[in-house]
Length: 161
Ligand SMILES: CCC1=C(C)/C(=C/C2=NC(=C\c3[nH]c(/C=C4\NC(=O)[C@H](C)[C@H]4CC)c(C)c3CCC(=O)O)/C(CCC(=O)O)=C2C)NC1=O
Image (tube, rainbow, N blue to C red):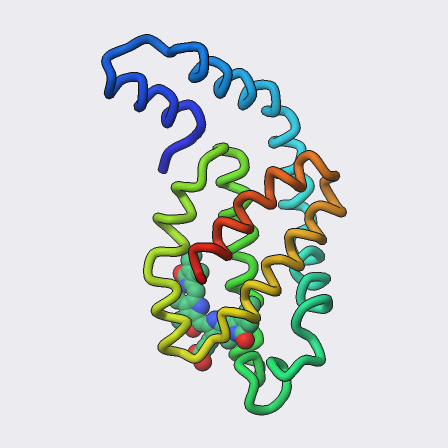
């Protein structure tokens, strides 16, 4: 995985140069939001199951997905869905702390779309649930940190579509 610091340093290193102004600006923006990121990650970690419960209630409950014939029907599949949402929330939080999405590519998106397609997991429903987590999370951590988390929730959604 990469983070905001290694990604800036690596791209300067490839050119054999010291960091230029735009690289310094990127680093500065990252350092200035450090406390915001740590505070948001703490709040998300302490409230993960509530975030997921509220997102499921907003996006999935009482829809065709949870009725007989739907992909979340049966306790086993319902639990698999909740577990997937917990993965998305946890890895988005890691990526938000790192300021870089590469961990999501490596550990979440790699092969996921193919897995969902082969199991009949409706990607549209997954995207709706992730968007609902984005709203619920922003409500918890505030709009600045919420926007930052939104980048990584959206990153997962685009990787699935
Ligand atoms: C850490 C990275 C990681 C991810 C992301 C991951 C996802 C993942 N979700 C799966 C299944 C599943 N995923 C869902 C999810 C849903 N169904 C719906 O209708 C909802 C819209 C949605 C929840 C939002 C369901 C129901 C299954 C079980 C499908 C089945 O076995 O029939 C499977 C197949 C194997 C299994 O059942 O465990 C994988 C690999 N596994 C991983 O290791």
